[in-house]
Every structure is written in structure tokens, then in C-alpha cells.
Image (cartoon, rainbow, N blue to C red):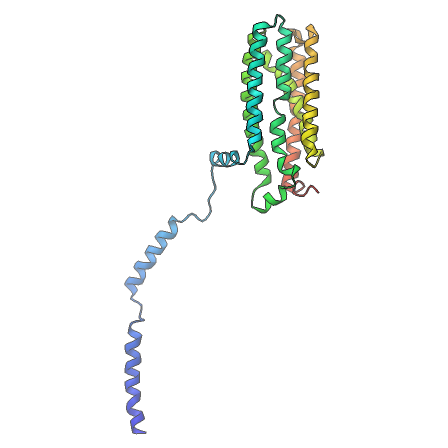
Length: 260
């Protein structure tokens, strides 16, 4: 019993000695915590990319076919309009060619816009945390920029073969452009498989043919007809705006995720 009592103070002393290494120094603790808080403030817990970065990200997902077709259409337009300006004697011929290119300009962009839907990949893209509504809106902005650049070059080339002002000529070219897009968006929202590409191409050819018809009537492009063309353009842009809004609403509600 006496030996056991002598061991107890020794064990207590050893235990206290061992615990010294685990004691927390308040000064060191505060210094370490200050470093942790400073490093935590520098961490980006929620990153929101800017519009240019988002645009650049969407560009990398566009197919090579889109760029090839856009380049081929631009080269064809430059060649045809250059030849028309040098050889066509009638301004109506230049106007007909310009209207045809304006009507066909947006079909490649609309086909690219519906590529995910045609291949039933929209649901998978949403699974990968892609905002479908944002993706559609950004791609439409990109395609609209490309189309406006195309139409600007087309208007300059067409104006060289006609006597109309650039503002008047833009109205004449925007009407077939808007009318054809109404058809393209209608096919995009109604046809839910890969046949949409072929239907849109057929619709583009039909739009080209129809857009050339006003050039057969001399009175169609007289100054007195400009208000009529302007009214038609405003109505078509309103319809086009409704179609785009409906498409984005369907994307927000998830109606575009599953097309089966």
C-alpha cells in the first residue's frame, strides 16, 4: 500500500509534464488565426464571370460546320455581288441578289442554335450545370452580331449597284431577313429532331425565292413604298421578338430539356 501511494505523485507529475506540450499559447493562437482569416478573405468562394468571358466560352462550343458555312456564304456573297455590280445593267437584279442573301443569312445560325435540341443533348447540358436559357440568349446574341456584320457588308455591296440611300436599302434587306427568321424559329420550336436541319434548309431556299419576287415589280422599291416596307419590318420584328421570348420562357421552365 505504501509503495502504491509513492507511485501516485510520480504519475501525476509525469502526466502534468506530458500535458505541457499540448498547452495552447494564446499569442501564437491569435497569430495563426489572423493568418487564416487573411487567407480566407482572399479566397473567391463564388465566382461570377463577366459577359466577355462568357461569350468567349460559348464560342468554343460552336461547331466547325457553322464557321465553314458562314465563311462559304460570305465568300459566295462577295463573289456574286462583285460580279453583279460589274455586269448587271438593272438595279433590280442587284436588289434581287441582295434580298436572296439577306433571306439566307441566318439559317446556319438557327441550325447551330438548335443543334443540342436536335440531338437530344439539352438535358445532358443542363445536368452539367449549363444554364440553358443563358446559353440560348448568348448564342442568339453572337449569331445576331455575325448576321449584322454580314448584312452590313451586303448593304454596302448592294448599294454600289443601285441608286438608293443606305438607310432605305437597309430597310429593303431587313424585311426578307426578318421574314426568313420567323420561319426558321417556327421550325426550331415545332420540329424536335434532326430533320429540323433539312426542313430549315428547304425553308431557306423557299425564302430566297420569295424574297426575289418584289424585284420583278419596279414600283415595289420606289420612295413612296418606303413607309409600307417600314411598317412590314416593324410587324415582323415584333413577331420575331415574341418568338424569341417564347423560346427563352420554354428554356426557363424546362420545356426544352427533354425532346423525346
